[in-house]
Image (cartoon, rainbow, N blue to C red):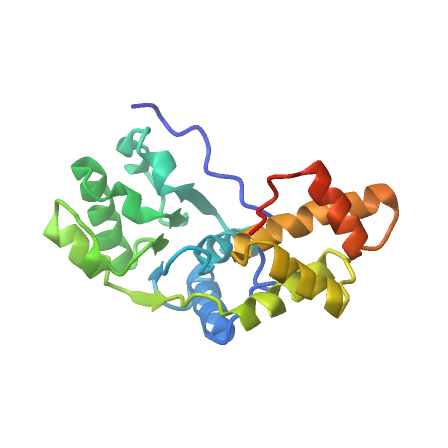
Length: 236
């Protein structure tokens, strides 16, 4: 296994300001309190695809960077090819954020590593936030103690987005990109393309580039033109 050269670079397009859900205020307040050392020392987020786990961890990394606080963001799938000893000397001033921590389940050395890190965080000698694709009780782990410790701290379920939520998020994200979407255009996007939120966000990014390049507003004809140039663009 190789050493991890650097933590992941966070995606600047994810921020607390563009995170939308009914429980956004509580989630953001909980995560920012951990980062600033004024709240829980362990926060776990769990939910299905497109529930916002990756968004919130990237937003946490941006929030920490803006305040010159050390937060290291990793993805569990990335860590499988790396040496767990990388985390032996993590300082108390470093906040760890692990997306897809459940990817490490079934890998004993990694489970032992995070068993120790969770213990350290519980003892207030570290801070840890992580995401899981399902609740800890449903995971398949080698170490029962590791599995039980995933429920320590503040464990928060992120519900999936409804069609109405997705429409509101797409509208909000388009405004942040400076894209003006009419009701007709918004309805067209949600009717003719995948309703997965991550797909809709990627479509917005493509349309943003196409709009800037053509110096035109995003209209249905422009969307159709982009579709012709990108025939595999998440069409339903």
